[in-house]
Length: 384
Image (tube, rainbow, N blue to C red; front, side):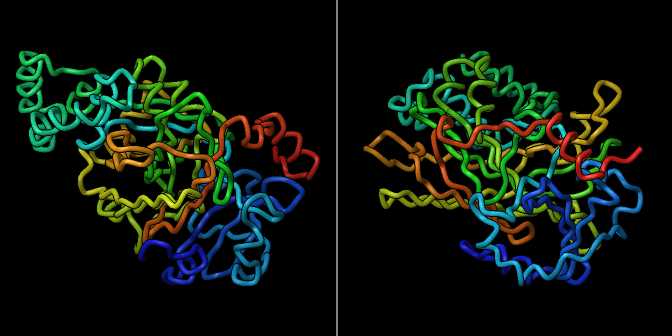
């Protein structure tokens, strides 16, 4: 699948039997749907939420009420707030994220920290830091004797960082990206804070896991990040990561089967395009083969006897792509402008497209868990 391929073409390219899980709003509220061989099924009668659906032991054979052919709906008719529209394909899941899982992003996080969030000084630090520690970080496996030896060397050179601790140490950075039900889907606005002058998209693969911690499928995500705010202090991570519209997931969850497995994810390529109203164009890609920790290791560091998720969870696996292409001026690097179109796509998972706006201008998030429960009750979908 080449950059720019539409969601419709992705769906048409799926092998027979491949199953996509999503959520749609036709005007009466969020409805879990299954898309298989071009046919759309409403599964709300057997699973009122996607969390319920993905927890079913008979997930591979689940079906519902036929709702027509996807090709008859027209993707343009369910985009950007129209009804029916696609929602983020998860609902009651906890939204988690793994940070600094690629060497390239580890170096960028150290740059943010040393630049104290000042975009102007980042390029100078990048030139010196990348040449001194970049190749060493790529070589080591986190948590090994080699990584401990590298830490000793970097400490002696005054180059150690809290970001390097989670990049090559034994413990991954696992954090809560966004509240339950706050993620936006394909076609929605994504938000950056108006008081941020240095921010970027983070294209990632998102594993979706059931309550037992088994990965049942994957989708695409945009872990929108405010680099200047996080760079001032890692303790501002919540302010940098969790804002109105700052988490996009979609378009669908592709369930694992014989043709799409965790090994597919391990070798996947994720592409990114940013197209600005000022004529600026940015493109890049992220290869999962360069991830420093196996996806299952990240899952196992997220759930276990130490932590449970009774409704399942979605886990962003991290990105190697931190855009540095100059936009406004030489040496200023990249930052979003309102109106940017952000496209994240993968041959295996389709295309997630959103438009950038200030968080204050993104439609406010008002539909939470209590609203969902009331909606399902009114529609007679809650089951004992």
